[in-house]
Image (tube, rainbow, N blue to C red; front, side):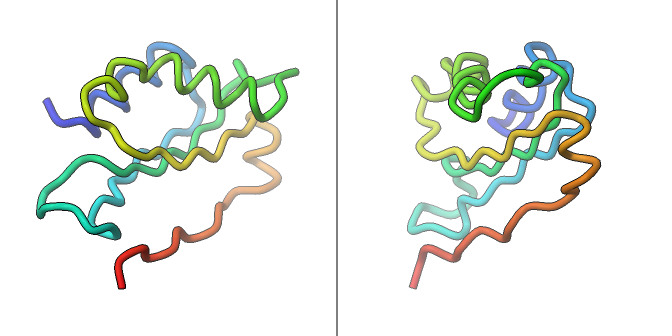
Length: 99
């Protein structure tokens, strides 16, 4: 199973998101072809209600502890409650890190 699939399954199980996007952004970085080391996660979940940003990020990091231990290098997180996601509905593009 790919890292992307693992991330999707673990976040779904841990946080029951109403919206989830897992985007492999490894090709934006200086890594070997077909790497799965840099990801962007866009997630809206009722589990984030009443949590500050740091608490939301901790929830995601806890769910993905095994992936970080196995080589996940970077994770860009955009975390929303369902109502925030409905109002916001988008996130900024990620920068291209390789020159």
